[in-house]
Length: 374
Image (spheres, rainbow, N blue to C red):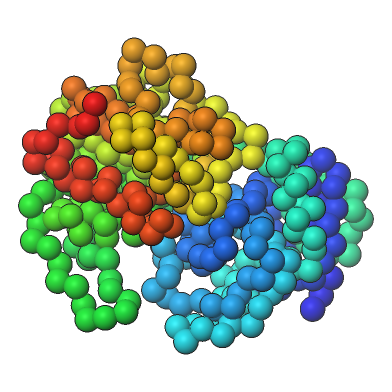
């Protein structure tokens, strides 16, 4: 394998070996503590513009396959790992190395990822580049410093669907006979800010027919589709920068039941008059403990976000329903009288594995007339 270097904007350097594509990679360097699911992570549109560091040392042993992809292509700009493992799973269709090379995404292995994760945790996520080029370290650091900051970037509009489409596919059963698709009881309009297909499958699982619309769709256009409810999807970038999103959602509040996840949660908070901020290093992993304040139960959740909602900004505007037990950040909110709620984490990722699946049923119940818990 060829020598490769990760250069961070603060001047830190990590030398290892290249895999995947040999083309340079650039973006915000972040870390994910999940022990599995690297293909789902790389194909999650929320990772647009980011180089992902996996804290688990051996990555690649399950290979890659088309069924595990959360979208039509990978969105992360690069991958950093400790050790590349050959595939040994019966579902594998291609190695991680070959899959990244096909998509022209650069990887770096052989570095001390513990040191890198500790550095990002202490100093915060920062921009970086991966390169195999014969250029000076100083030039690579300068290149890292030139990468645009995530703050102020509207990345959601760029990855959103360009055309409206219908989704009717339920979650597949990988280990048995096909599960019958429930008969649709509700029509849901999903505003696509960079969605994962698992979210749409879970909506179908609870009896929804889903119409997916672009991020720039107006409130009037959404209401013209006569939905029973509106779903605000996940996505990348700064929620404050998504063009027109807060105004659109504000115009929908109180008119239809609303359910938001991740970026959709942040956009709903801003539509209600709240504010958001960039976190030091964010939450990315499948082991984040979240307390549901209405039941006092703790859920083990999957998360991927670098921005969060300011709890004080929601005072008198919404109820905080969930808290992260690691740092007490807002993980959920609700306005029961307006029939809207949201969570910061990803219930469709199923790390519990079923701890948070009730949220999709809660949305279906809300559309059926059941009020939100208080």
